[in-house]
Length: 462
Image (cartoon, rainbow, N blue to C red; front, side, top):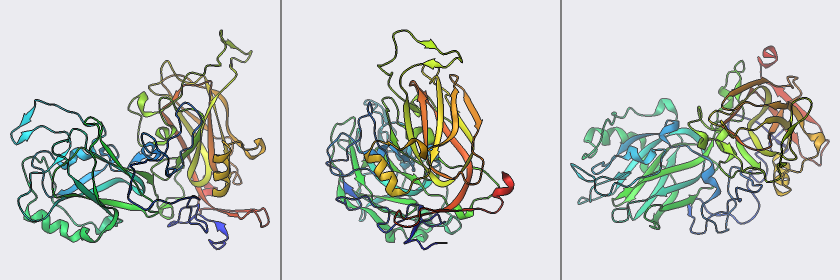
């Protein structure tokens, strides 16, 4: 195995793009936990865009790029409240809801005004309120959204956020919370959670004032630059008050050393570390959604483009039944781990009148420097660098399509894939099942050769 200073190497504890600059982008850096009053720019969804696993800093826009990543704390992916000091007006579980907060202006509970979030009582004793969240997806956090919508008179004025990477078997047993309302944590719960020593966890966001904006949409965004893997979050509110939602955006980080070499795995999954790094159009939905968790819930839970304006006035088919249209749309994905793809699933569920006519899938091998160059050049990669994984194939609406990959040979390890749809439309899921392999890419100055190490048991599967 070549030393890490010479190669881009896959290993259980490192990202496969580790280099001398530790994978950091060039340019001005923003300290971890920086509140985004001037937030990163998001590429216009109608035109080509880039969505790597970290946003570009310093340009003003309505919302940061990282919100296109997966919410690792959401109840939809298994996020869970382990502990909260107080749940008097509304339980902390509301923080993790997938839907946006709502307002029921004239509705009350036995304890006060109904609110859609976590709200503690007005504190009259020393200290401050806080809660512990176990992430549903463990990985690297790129950004945090502290949403205080509809809490204009009751929001927490200040917060801080801490994080820890805890081993599963070392997590203490904490009493189940059950249904919480009008209650505070019991002495037994305080005693159990004290074993986590959460006061000593790393700070991702220091104590920061929250800023209310539009009552119906009041987001406080924080850019996180930490490269560590995190499993738990501690949200501190100072001294008390309410927060509607806590979104923890990032990418999964899988322990590849612990994977079963005989079992194929989805190498594109965002839970494992896959990410969209470019696209031609994302008018109705970002491509990161199609490598998301579980089955699609609706057409909103997928990638959908605008209708192409260059469509012919009257559509026609070729002799082989292919739709004759001049253009296409595409999305680029960096795999969570270099590997060989053996099975491809392209799902158009919920896209009934707006599915693509056909699609194709190609793969290539890129270093991180080459990826950065391609992002700058709108993914104008020479044709000879691409390997066909799936030829142009017709798609049916509202259906899951499963194909065998064209490239089963051991030398066909790839790091990136390009999904092309013709002429436009929507896809709900892309699953790329295969087998990870260790790969060392030498620096360009050295002899242009590559070395592939396939896990034990992989060759037998092929």
